[in-house]
Every structure is written in C-alpha cells, then in structure tokens.
Image 1 (tube, rainbow, N blue to C red):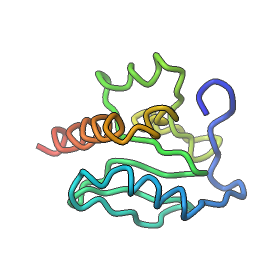
Image 2 (spheres, rainbow, N blue to C red):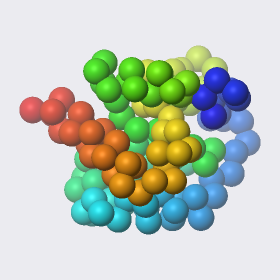
Image 3 (cartoon, one colour):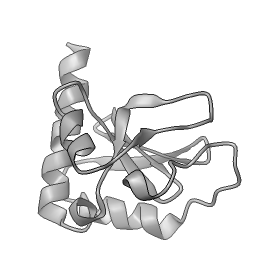
Image 4 (tube, one colour):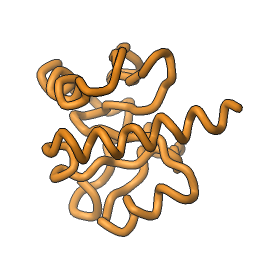
Length: 121
C-alpha cells in the first residue's frame, strides 16, 4: 500500500478475505496464542490477550511507538486510517516483503507486542 495507493477507509465497502487473515496467522505461528477477532469490518490480532495489530482491507497494520514507527515511514508505509476523519498514527502498514518473510514478520510483530506491553506497565 504505502505511497502508491491510499489507505483504506472504514465505512467504505470492503471485504476482508478470511484467507488473508489465515495467512497472517500462519505466518505468526511462532508466537504463542495469536488470535484474530472480528472488529469494524476487519480483524484485531491478539497475543495472549494483548491487542497488537489490525487487519483491514487485506492489509496488516501493527502497533508502533515514536521509536519504531520510523522504520515503517522509511520504507514508505502509511498509518491506518479507519475513516476520512480518523487517523491511527500508532498503527502502520507492514510492507509486503516483511509480511511474506515469516522470520522477519515475527521479529516486527514481537516488537509491536513489546511496545504494547511496555505501555501497560
């Protein structure tokens, strides 16, 4: 997605492909207890009860913080925009090459989970 196409807007007709969700969960099988729950026409991803990612319009967005989001910006990824008026600046799109590399994706997602866990303390 990134700079080449606009971020999906919730409220517009979108179909979340169950096979994409299943692919993401399969890619993350090295992380214990990752689950997906339907939400707002997409899915929220949880690891041991920690909400760390959003799947919307067949795009995976993970939780970032001020330190980690720069990596996403540097490769041209955009933040999640659930509506025309709302921007979730702490959830960034995962690049396709990362999504397709199970080991690299696991590293990125573990950082996202750590970001959420650290903020809860």
